[in-house]
Amino acid sequence: MAGWAGVGFVVLNVVAFLLFGTPPGADAPASEIADYVADAGNAYKVGTALTGIATVLFVPFLAGLLVPFFRSDREHSEGFGVVVFAGALLSGTAATLGLSATAALSLRAGAELDAATTRALWDLSYVAYGSAILAVPILAGGAAMAIQKRGVMPDWFGNLSWLVALLGFTGIFGLVSTSGLAYLLLAGYLGLLVWVLVAGIVLVREQPA
Image 1 (cartoon, rainbow, N blue to C red):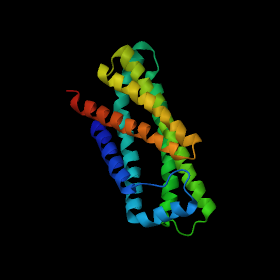
Image 2: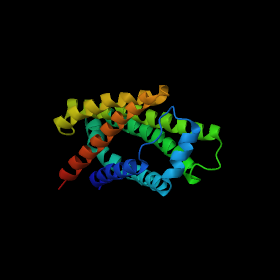
Image 3: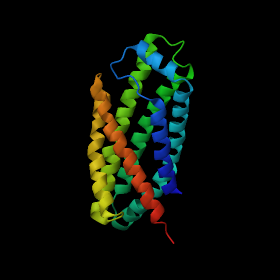
């Protein structure tokens, strides 16, 4: 169930990403942001809803993923599982904040909001999603260390985890950039999706007897 939940998380995120189209950059004026949300209409709302459902699916995925980490921690008096959980908690909390900001924009399709409010919600979404990606190095890095030291998952997945952890540092651009550089956080986002998808497949294929 955890493995399929991970796969579902990725599928829903990809569909939502396609529905969102090409959003304005972090430096776009408030009028352009409002027009984008209004023009997207129901597609934007459906994308927001799918992202919310995907967030729910992430919980059982994480629960199943953590089982071998916590088992190893108990045997060796270590805390890698706590590190992975903390990274996931920080990332999920920040992503939920970003989702809330975009949902607030979509409720009235960009109407009845003044320019300052539109700008604040849009900036909040960038900062929140940037923070979510910036927590990925904790999540994937903790997993990579446990795999490297204790072999709780396949070695090649540990190498992938190191790569995804490095990509997660692109989230910093969502925090400090008001230019097109903010788009670089997409590298960390795509890395996270690939990581969850692969982890989900590993969990499905390695079901206990």
